[in-house]
Amino acid sequence: MTATTRDTGDAVACTGLAYAFGETNAVDGLDLTVREGEVFGLLGPNGAGKTTAIRCITTLLPVPAGMVRVFGQDAAGDRMAVRRLLGYVPQQLSADASLTGRENVSLFARVFDVPRRERAARVGQALGAVGLTDAADRLAGTYSGGMVRRLELAQALVSAPRLLILDEPTIGLDPIARTGVWEHIGAVRAATGMTVLVTTHYMDEADQYCDRVGLMHHGRIRALGTPAELRQGLSERRGAEATDPLPTLEDVFRDIAGSGLETSSGDFRDVRSTRRTARRVG
Ligand SMILES: Nc1ncnc2c1ncn2[C@@H]1O[C@H](COP(=O)(O)OP(=O)(O)OP(=O)(O)O)[C@@H](O)[C@H]1O
Image (cartoon, rainbow, N blue to C red; front, top):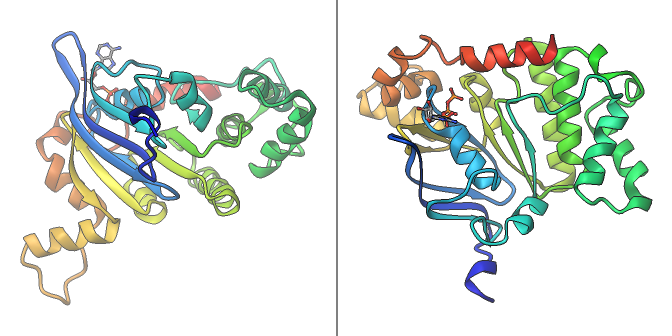
């Protein structure tokens, strides 16, 4: 095997990844490994560099410094090979309100080269996997926010990716719609063994649905582990008694990102993203 096709068994391996916008070091020496089959949550305050890192991993941005591999494929080398391995749900709207759900997913099937004779069946399966079979032939413009998010999930799933990358998939959704999105992700994952890399500002979701989380701050991972490990670690650092309740993941986040949070919106909600989502579903 050559260096560019070496498969480490990891879904994503970033080493020393750096990306700057002018003077701003958005990603600053990021080391990150996402293991095959896991749900990995990338958390961090506004401006931590999560979206920029994800855009490098999806090959939408170049890799100016460091290394990014997706299932062993070099993102700076064969970008199409990397793109074929992944499905991506960005923060911005990726569904067209003037098309039906089925038409939207069909468009992605064509773009991702799903063989013509399999297309109709695969589109139907993707819509079914996110619970949109009954609404498939309605215009996406008539969908609720949660349905739009599930439609975008179907778009990303139609190419049967080995790695699904979701940038704040539940922002702006009500609790029931949030749970719905996660349940559909979980069902597809259980059926296919797909790896999931997700960013979220909702600590409760990270705690409940992610196998491991990485807390990113100023362009790097500052803490890494299962939610339980991170909570236990903070408890030990605080010298808590065994009978004390474990701190929450939000406590861990505040402990690490500290001042970074005070310069943002005060909680983990990204106002900018919420607005983007509000536009998308409006
Ligand atoms: N297109 C751009 N031009 C200039 N600076 C940018 C651009 N995109 C991002 N940045 C800057 O890079 C840094 C990292 O931004 P990024 O969007 O990656 O963070 P994030 O962790 O995804 O934040 P959020 O949680 O708010 O989405 C920030 O300082 C941001 O202002």
